[in-house]
Image (cartoon, rainbow, N blue to C red; front, side, top):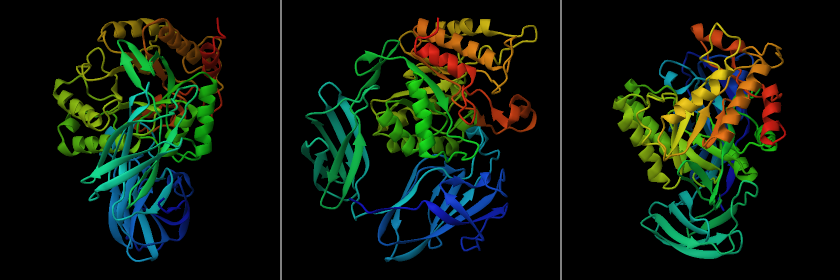
Length: 536
């Protein structure tokens, strides 16, 4: 197996404001990795350039892995550039020659600006720093990479294994965790073999069994985890391993007031444990690629996941910009490769709430669909749209996802409550959708301030939120809607400026069914009862 060093811990650090620092700049402070520097005094809320630096003793060909960072960064080895991380949250792998065996200097220069260029990508707070683990591994001359293990037939345990090893041709030994072994052949740097795994275990929601395989060549040896399952659609139903399943879930931001986007794995596990216990089976990872540790937890705990690219409010001008669309295409491919072997990921998406009502953008949306499909032949692909009934791209999506907020954004002055608008709005939108595809409610919700209870059931109260979301859940249960992901799991800090700040009390999006510290609101309590059949 490859030798891997974890580079988490204390790094030298400096914040430079609007000045772009030289890589050799003097650093008088320290910062912990993972972590968000703009949550640490005296740099709280600052936007600008920062520099992280540390020494690493290693040599030869290496692979540097960063499990997400933000907002963008350049990576340097002994003062020379070795790569960039231009998309926040996206896991990055960089391969380069580290030189001779000795102590080297690894430096990462961050830019956490939230500027006009980034506006199409964020409608939430963008943190600066390392979000997840940083590791470095020695790699051989012909490293095996981009391993993809897909389920071809869940009933027989038939799987397909593909991998790359540039320049290598020869045998590959496949050693599975249950003792089964097989052989494959790398031809011109590519492995592609299909086999039936004897004694396989199925990945199910209530019994999420995982497998491991070692791929061993004369040049390299790596281990990959995977699960055997099929997630597909049949008419208006979603099907897991031959059985219809309704997605009952939430949108979840990787966010916490203390940790920002560098949420510790223990908190991820606690979030998932809360959701599982309360009867949820689905998380939409809004609105960016998910960290490896989070997906591993979902694999092991039996939680279905929608993963999507970072890109909100992509407009016609962005589709017409080759650089902007090209960046999205590249991101879609890298995201799909990075999480391919996680059985929890059952839907992939892109461009949340984009201009899908403009015919001129249909070719770009089709291109993004095709990019994901070229990597993953089986996954269901969607786009969470707030443009229905005017969306012109419904024929492209495998799953229709409606982002709609009846009872909140359609509120009026004449009434204290507009919950009576919720079900009619869903029914009206659903009636205009293709009848041969499943549809889910991708987002719906309303804001509630934790602790605000009101006998009049008014807006911003926990009482109003609870009743409004119960009406949404009743609709999903009683209709042919295939699922729902509430907006959202927990209150999260929002990026707000100008007049928009008045719609985000405390500077947070307060639509969570728990607050930012995971304290349950009334909606959490009532929906838990509903999911467990304990409510009349």
